[in-house]
Amino acid sequence: MPTDPRDGDTATGAVQAVIDAIYDSIAAGTLRPGQPIRQELLADQLGLSRQPVREALRTLASDGLLTYRRNAGFSARELSLTEFAQAYRLRQLLENEVLCDITQVPPAAITRLREINSAISAAATRQDLGAFRRLNTDFHFTLFELSPLDLFVTELRRIWLLTSIYRALYASTPQAIDRIVTEHAAIITALEAADLPRLIALHNQHREGTIEALTHRLQPTTP
Image 1 (cartoon, rainbow, N blue to C red):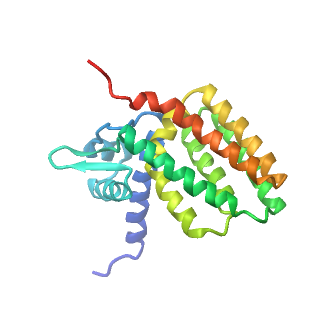
Image 2: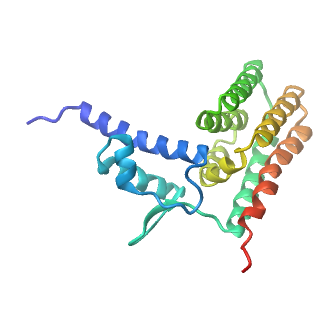
Image 3: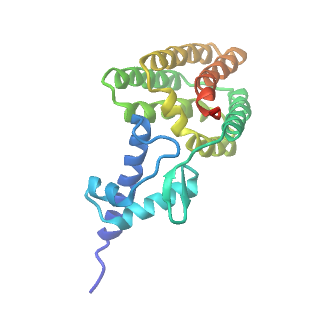
């Protein structure tokens, strides 16, 4: 019997649905670093077979967002304090290089960044943390992609994926969300003025907010 060409699209869509559900769980704070993922439960919740769930989990593990241990299964990636510091140091190095190389800023880019920041604020107001996470990533990569350093931006996406669960932890309070939106607005103003030193300083400060808020959570507890 010939294979229906739509089957591949259906399978791909099911895998993506699982990936999106995991990202939304991270953004909503229901999936936290180190937490195990039960394949059977996830399949039942999404109304899917276990095959696309397994494929999605393997994809996310290969991307570094999840870890897999024999006899324990998949769990959300948990970074040590040292790994966390390294990941954010890599972000600083790459992001500063990318921002330094921005030479042209089309007015449409400024408009787009303001639209995204307004949408971030609206998503926060309606407590849609999944949309907030996606829009926050869109904001930063709309900014980064103004740079011609395509390979740097590609590597940044990988590091951002690795640390996404920690950004979700940070952006889980109204105070943090208000700070994010306010700092985005200042970044846009510096970009519009073509003030690259100020843009970089503001972006570094923006990143440091996450580091300061989360470092104590990764400190080993003493008995």
